[in-house]
Image (cartoon, rainbow over all chains, first blue to last red; front, side, top):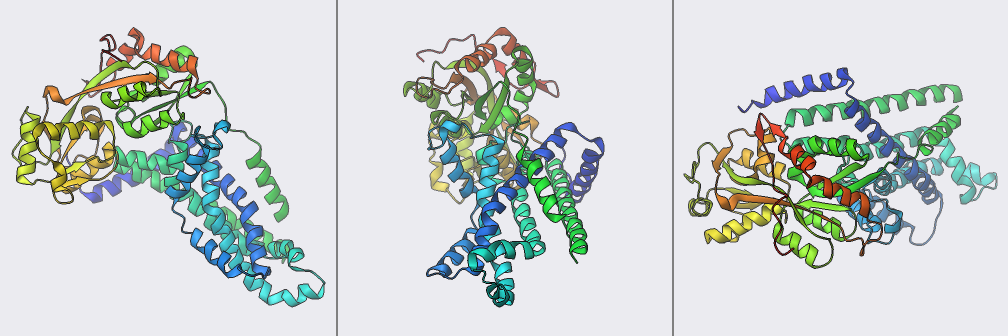
Length: 240
Length: 274
């Protein structure tokens, strides 16, 4: 095999990416669906924990709060491989949750990604909502609402800003490879997602195909973001 | 509107349970997966038995670890010494020969160590060390890594002396190792299967092959159900019985890339003392 100049590889990757989408390849379709399902479920799970936690931190004042905020911000940098290893050791048959038999399943991948992005959602939500809270803490307090009561109100009023927070979480989840590779095992037809497929093709030396898959992934992420933005606009008009 | 959308999304995500089917998990090596062998033989097995095979492809050392922790039903790897220890320590049941292929040493067009065409691995490795030509090592406790270290020993060279200079351990799989060797114009040892299916060769070519010391034996064993009660003993054993049977062996022999056979079945040869 003759080596190709890099420009040709880029060109061929772009062609292949279009070809993959145009063919409606069933294998690729399943990989894409699994990627979306795992990452969106992880975002939903992480949001259930992360957003209320962020809101609570925005309104509550207690000793050690500064430390919690710093810890949460630091956890945003949790390396995916480390999150993956933690979940691996928990879910392994020899680990504490072994009897559940969840290792090397999509569920394990959801858990790992949720662990990875919950701190991101909490930290970003805290920041966004704290600014809002400063604006109308007085007003809410005058209705007799304590910090606990203010949490749902804040979350609801901040929903448009929080959408961006959710998208940041989704971006991180759908882009990471380290955690899902370890806990999912990259099993063909079962736990293979876009990022692990890209890693696999890279190690097989099929760089154009790997890059083509990367382009497809980017297109999907772009679509999800555009849809979210569209929904936000519609909802904002209705609310407005 | 917004609230209803969130609710609908939550429901859509929450309802479908991930599909369950009759399946076993096999911890195996990157060489069997990435060469495309599994893609060729597993559908045949699944068609015959209705058992889906989920392959987790890792280095041999890692794959044995997965078996040791009870996270796979079957282990299918290529480091006989490590496999025999695995069985001896009670982690696996009887180990059986499945097939072999061979390792080759690949290197850059320029061949700075002047070893192209050699059939003597020990002499070739010695020349690489003497000329301090860059060599990329897996460095990941895989079967290939273990075999490479044995070959250095036979050559009477301690590659650790060149660590970080000409001897570069990258701690990754076969593919990344070849990608690195191609990018750095370095030598590397690879199994022939991965080499044949590897696409990003750039200037790399085979420089040493055909030495009996480059023989690469694969073995298969069931993870010990006495240690891990959840191991799917029956279905796992069925896979092992199939792969060493004439049907399984024929499937292995039938896998070719560009007309070249990658793996040579040899289950009939008894495993001494295992």
